[in-house]
Image 1 (cartoon, rainbow, N blue to C red):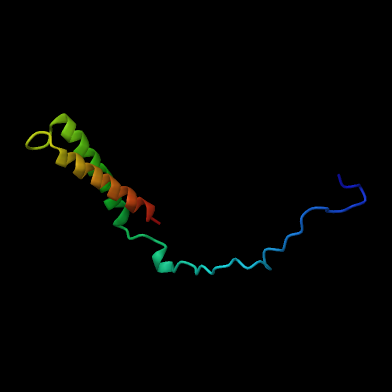
Image 2 (spheres, one colour):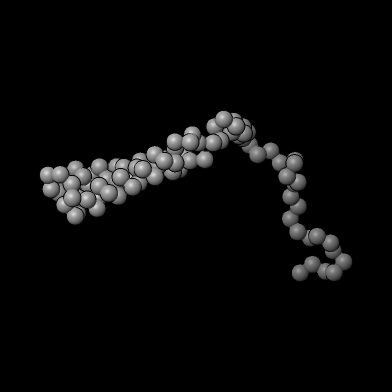
Length: 89
């Protein structure tokens, strides 16, 4: 245990200005920071259409009864909407 006369006594680290981060990451250009105006509408549309496909398949609302293709289409639409959501700014 450090005595009362010692000051600091801890680990010495460099100031943030002196550290080299290792890699330079350039800033994102301003034209790439904002998504187009149509982007959120397509994103929400894909999620809703995917949900409607899955619900419609189980409720037998879709033409030609229930098929696995409707479930796959619904899941693909939902996954596409989620992927779009990760790129939304």
